[in-house]
Amino acid sequence: MTKTIVITVSPSGESRVQTHGFLGAACQAASRFIELALGNRLGELLTHEFHLPQQTSQQQTQGNGQS
Amino acid sequence: MSHIVTIKTEVRDAHAVRAACQRLHLPQPTHGNHQMFSGHVEGLAVQLPNWRYPVVCHLPTGELHFDNFSGRWGDSHHLDQFKQAYAVEKAKIEARRQGHSVSEQLLSDGSVKLTIQVAS
Image (cartoon, rainbow over the protein chains, first blue to last red):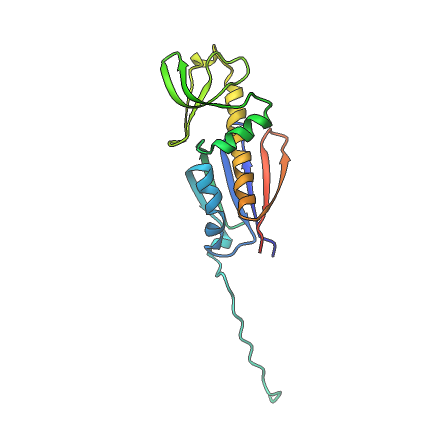
């Protein structure tokens, strides 16, 4: 999945930073450099994807065909 | 999306200030001790259109010092434009410094949307 950071700067100069394509807390690490560069954090909203695990490991056991 | 953060812009980067001035076709900022109505202020001065006094950027704190007498000595809209231009240019500088590509789009409400493609 393509990872992007979207920054919307309002006409009054306030910025909103959104991350897309990241799972778990990786989004915070990814956008941290922009947040620090722009200024002072006023608030943060965590979305559903933030609470998903960063990596999903799937283990498949294949049966031997016998019922 | 994963998280959304709202940020109040702090003007701390002289290079981004210069880029913002260029973006808005303003004179280049000047560093020094500047006369304001309330006294002298040290910092990087930006001369906004039709403002009696410059807006002085105190880079160590990110604060802006200005005297516009509630709009009588300068339209606040110009100050907002400068803050927006600074945030846009600063974000572009930092994204490119990290090796990412950036695209820019002007939205119908006057906001500027930057999309940073994170380099893998």
